[in-house]
Amino acid sequence: MFFNPLIAALSALVLARLGAFLTKSNAAGIGAAILWAFTTIAWAHSRTYFTEPLAALLGLIATGALLRWHFEGDPSKTRRHLICFTAALAAGVWARVDFPIIAAGLLVALAFFALQRRSEAGSRARFTSVAICGAAVALSFALLQFVNHSRYGGVDLTSGYADQSEGV
Image (cartoon, rainbow, N blue to C red; front, side):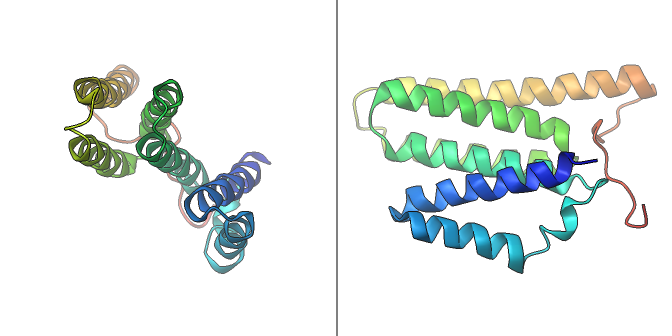
C-alpha cells in the first residue's frame, strides 16, 4: 500500500542528490526535487498500482551513477559507481516493460563516455567495464524472458511488476 509513495519519495531524494552533484549546489538539487515532485505527474503516479515510480527511481539511480563514474577520476570510487549503474539497469529491466529502452540509452551513454577517454591510461579497463555492464543487463533481460517463458509458456516481454489499467 505504501510502496509507491515511498519509492516516489526516494526518487525525489535521488534527484536532489543528482542535482546537487551536477550544479555543486544543495539548494539547486533540492529545488529540482521539489519541482519534480509538485509540477510533474510523479505525485499522481505514486498511487498503489503504477509501475512508473520504481522505473523512475532505478533510472535516476543509474543516471546518477553513470555521471559520477564519468566525472570522478578516482578508480576506487568509479568501480563502485559502475556496479551501482549496472545493478540499477539490471533491476530496471524487471521493473517495467519499456525500461530496456532506457537501459539501452544509458548503455550507449556509457560507451560514449568510455570513448571520450580512450586516450587516457586505463581505457582498456573502461571498455571492459562497458562490455561487462552490457552483458549483465542482457543477462538480466534473458533471465526475465526465461522466467516469463516458464511461467506463461511463451516469450512475453512484460515484467512481473506489470502495468495496471488506469481504472484500478
